[in-house]
Length: 402
Image 1 (cartoon, helix red, strand yellow):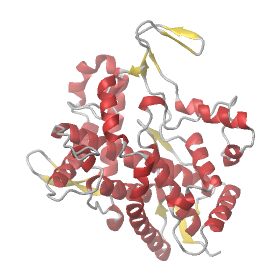
Image 2 (cartoon, one colour; image 1 turned 90 degrees about the vertical axis):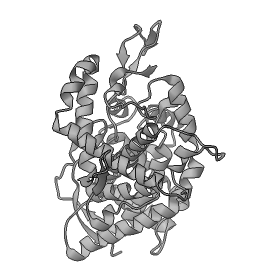
Image 3 (cartoon, helix red, strand yellow; image 1 turned 60 degrees about the vertical axis):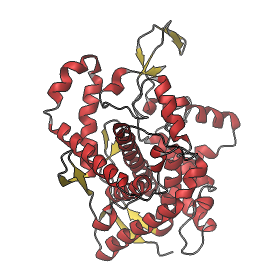
Image 4 (cartoon, one colour; image 1 turned 45 degrees about the vertical axis):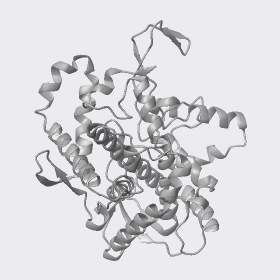
């Protein structure tokens, strides 16, 4: 079932992997980027991950010394902007060093100004979602939407991507970064993509590579530090595998079964994207869950509901990583069949390998080295946009003493 016209709302003149509706176009884009996000490629990013992780730890240590509260949602977002910006463009964006997300943006006439990355990205997704819901009258309402202040934020977002893309293209020395994969294939042959298409792909990658993983990491930190028994069990596993003061490597952390269970359970109970992705029933109609659906009808399966199905996940509203360690093979198979935080099939999230890679090392490191005190009774809010974006997560932070 192909993507519905819902995806037209945020699309520009050039489609990217996320909003391409045409099957052949999508397959071509996925083939172009498949090697980039393959598991064997992702693990080569570890030196950059560790470099940015050290900067993150430096920032957390400064908060401890100053005895100031730290907003984990914000600093994790800064970390991922820095990391993914470096992975994509090969140059530093410096959010962690500055302690803010103000980045250079550039208009088409060359004017450079500074705007907040996070606000620019999140606000434009609000208006895009509204347009998507009203996609059947999109040609009528799109001209009116350009006057909305959130559309101005969309222009700021586009100008951030434009500036960094232009800056990277001006680099005469090819970098071993993700951007190079948009210029040449794995055999070194030029792809000759139009500039607009390069911009579109960079925009999609900077969006998905920062905000989605920020949501996942923030949710996991919140759940771990508000479930002390789970945290204690996870720490025992990490401390046994990584003694001393070494930052966990991906090779070691990826083999920690309880760590993976904690991450999977977080993705289940607080998925980064929780609503149903709209699809069109093809010609001739289809039977879905025992009911015939005529052609042309838009259908979807809400991720949130799927991941909280009590017939599959016992006590589904409870954060219980131990459920993933069950020895009941039938139960495990049933859960895995319904556990689709990254969707499934040929249009599933192509970045899932890098998302797991980043979470595994970062969560293991924070849990190993830091105590995070969450105020009693605090509830992490969620803003529904395209993703389920978590709100601020203020914590008192300190280095572990034991």
